[in-house]
Image 1 (cartoon, chains in turn red, blue):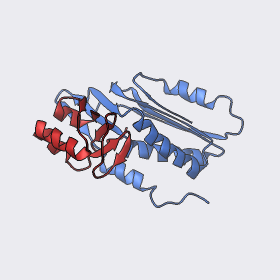
Image 2: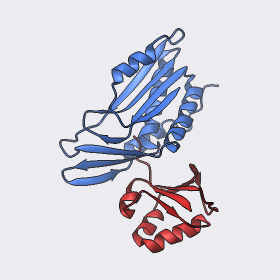
Image 3: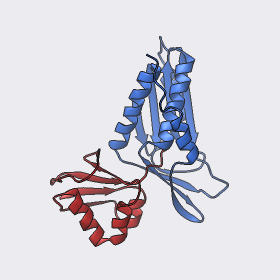
Image 4: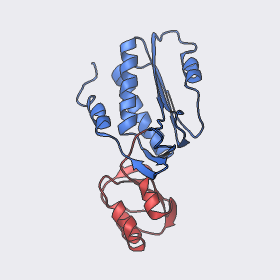
Length: 79
Length: 153
């Protein structure tokens, strides 16, 4: 069960900020989120959306374990 | 060397006084305070979201760069998160150096970074609804001023 966090407009699109989701890989997690909520799937694939695993930005696919914190970060707006 | 996120309003004057206290080798302290604008009534509240831990780490990394680049002796960065009313302070940056140029430039550098690249998500809430804000072209141009400039050897 990865712990999924949504920030900024992504949490408005989804209607939630944090959720436990079972997925072995980041790609599987994305697919699962997109199947459950196509508008969220589209927002996650949008330009400038980055992913952090346990607070480190990653690109491409990666395995997830039961305690991985997966954060989807839309373009940052600064302070 | 302090970076802090806070949900509570703060007093920039008190922070500056405390930051200046007990300095023997610091010849210059520069500070910047950013306030939330009302935008002629179109914004009633700003909502600022951070990613606790990740946001501080990202700011700490750039503060480390500022320390190397400008030879800073100390810095204090305080940033509000949560709901912020017009007129309230959002951000406070203070830099301490031996001489004024380094203190001014480091403060400017840190603010350009905070305005365009720091991990915050900002929403304006007003009578016409709410909207997420992304950096303006000017913010990108401001941070680009520092790219490609080498630190003094």
